Length: 261
Ligand code: FES
Image 1 (cartoon, rainbow, N blue to C red):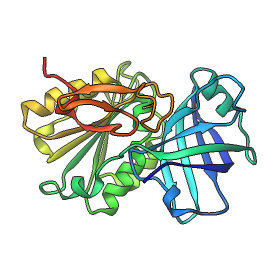
Image 2 (spheres, protein in one colour):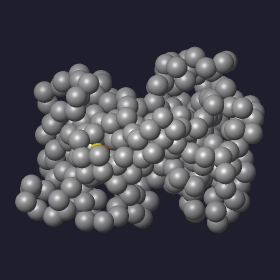
Image 3 (cartoon, helix red, strand yellow):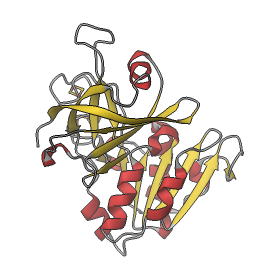
């Protein structure tokens, strides 16, 4: 499916944590091909073509509702583009290009083994995991969520209806296990592990999974210019050759993109 441009209106912009915002948008002329599935993202822009920053901002989909024609983004305010997005108020408009990327193969994940799936997130990497857990639950799996944060976690209450369990690790020890999320994850209890977060976290999760022969799927993050596979600026080397994170990914089998050393 090719990405399309769509002008949308801001329904709500909420502050979830000091530098974390939740932006919900809606559009009037519903186009089914515009709806995302878990793991996909959009390029967001609310400033003119000749205004800085030059590039639109790639932001993963946090939630989406075909019933209400809404898409929700959970994002970190970091840099000029996200600062402009954070200034948007209800009724303002912005342009979305998407949906971009391959997303998670939820049907295959839900059918793996007995359907015991661990979903692992780190920090703002938890953002795309809400729609993932929702789609997994709808497909009959019972995802268990493992999340790692530096300090106070955010946004976890939304996961509760879709997850069999939610386990938290924090670097500071403020909530849950004091340490890394890999300290509470037991891949041997699962048929599949799906992860999104900092590279170092996903690599740690992959190593743990490899020790227990549990398949691991990761969603990578890269700086992106076009988001459409055209500029090759987000190319990463994989075991099967160069791949664009924005079009071939961002979701890959962990063994394709990480080494075990
Ligand atoms: Fe242009 Fe990925 S951002 S190819």
